[in-house]
Length: 207
Image 1: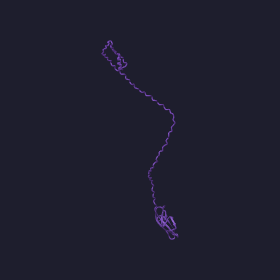
Image 2: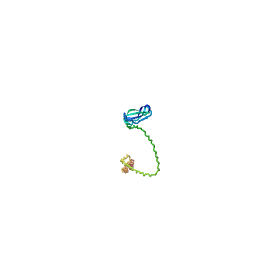
Image 3: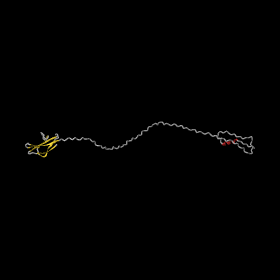
Image 4: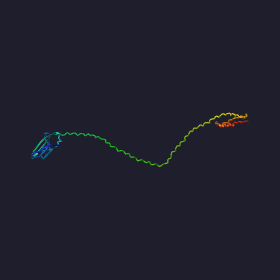
């Protein structure tokens, strides 16, 4: 919107209005875009103009004031219309916000002990025990101890007994004899031998 500022006042004033025309020397003007207004204006706002639908280039604004008899008074102002160039809106670029990892501690698991089943003793049932193998006695070998045979003891040879020198006269007809007895065993006691010798020897004294 364009604000038009100026003065509109004539003797025996009746009203005023604003118009526009294309170029600086238009052949015709538009219908009033502001007015008619019934109060005079001195150095103030005359009206508002919207040139958004016009093409770029020279244009002319015209102020028309009338008095009580209908006479018209005008003034013109040359202007240039330049529509603003549409500025392309910036393309929005999506920038992902940096994600700051947040560490959330996990809840600590609490171990709940499970119920313990109490074993129920079963009734005793007679169960035959399997036969037990009785180990056979192990034969023991007994080594026979050899019994040593008796050792033969040599029998001492008989010694001739000297005839004692006496006054006795020995009967020549009686000859002493010694007869050894058979030994039942190789083991002969010396005392037994002497006893036998004494028994078998006969000495006769002859007067």
